[in-house]
Image 1 (cartoon, rainbow, N blue to C red):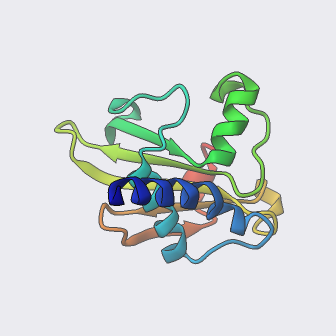
Image 2 (tube, one colour):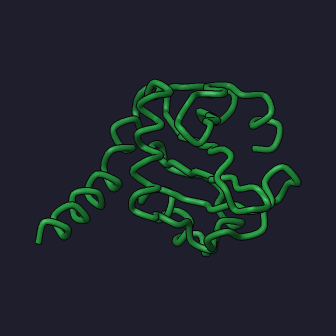
Length: 147
């Protein structure tokens, strides 16, 4: 029974924790990393994604795409990620980046926070190493260039 309680707690936490940032300028890089870890622990795989799918760049041959419940709901309502026109504030999408040996080499995240950066649709961009060390956070040019 204790395992079930942990699963329920992690599921509830993954449903509501990112929502707390929906109407603010966003969390600290460390707080966002904790949100990422919740998605990793609950295996919140994004609709249309599969574990260790082929990456879109040569630097990450394999990826795992994760999302919180707000983002997943938006993707499902749109009929797929490519049909999404706008995410709700509080939506969190994460990409785990793996090398050719399927070893985690980095994690990137995008969190929509209402008051963060209206000129870039209020997305907070973040990049972490596998241990959670912050590599980039906020208005990250290389992220904005693609997203």
